[in-house]
Length: 377
Figure 1 (cartoon, one colour):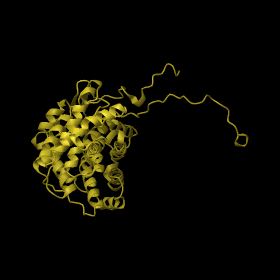
Figure 2 (cartoon, rainbow, N blue to C red; figure 1 turned 45 degrees about the vertical axis):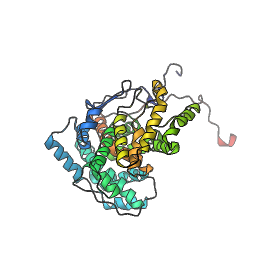
Figure 3 (cartoon, rainbow, N blue to C red; figure 1 turned 60 degrees about the vertical axis):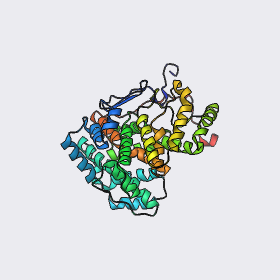
Figure 4 (tube, rainbow, N blue to C red; figure 1 turned 180 degrees about the horizontal axis):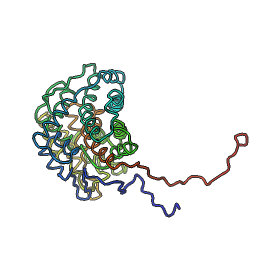
């Protein structure tokens, strides 16, 4: 049997379900949400519109958006015990604190136990607003500051920066955060999304699936690229050293962080929007050297593009966060803020025609053997 069964390690190339949420063409470097190009959404829509689109299937009209936005803003509250949990775990990694707090919300909020589609939407809206609150509260608490209350007059992205830093962001900074969230909102059956769907396959609730997704995203092979890119930029130091850095990495057969993707063979279509944002923000904040280092690395990597080693979205994200003065260990939690609507709608899809996800493993251990009593071993 071993000779007749094909093993697709990592389930690479395996279609396990149909989905009407996002479409990825890795060869052409294309991404769309519900039939809308990521380029149109990143340049013309808000994160709130994209959330509605992903969850409900169509772009909202003015009244629908106002109602949806009001629901998101009304959900900007946390039970007091969550702040106590954050204080108790203040020294932990932000992803561990976030996962713990979301798990606690499942116990503290009775509605989290409901598993119908309407409940998933209601709980999803609430979690979408609560996740950035948890991250910002932890950042303030671990630095000896009081959590910054949410501002109901601000957009989702602007409110996140307000809660994190205690100062109103510029329109350009808020818009760049908005675009960042849009670009990370959904991306097919990636590791964390698949893990969330496996959880829903057991008929668990949404909070349980989000805890699973957060646990999976925390792994450096999935969510850690932006942080690694920033470490690389600091290591390079100046643009003139980028070519030697790349040459040394390739000679040692080591990966250059921020290049290549499990799905895309062409350039990640999300990257261009982050690239433009880094350049503009760097100039605005008087630190153009970060962008210059990144572009020097891109230039040095051009000979390897034919092998599928093109720049991905996380290549630019880390520098944006750096320019905002955001600590590196918050980069993955920020990814989670943007990915919330994608996880939610994938869980809804899974629930609509639910089935227990149970793949097989091909046994390659010892043949059947006789049990030997411990006295004779």
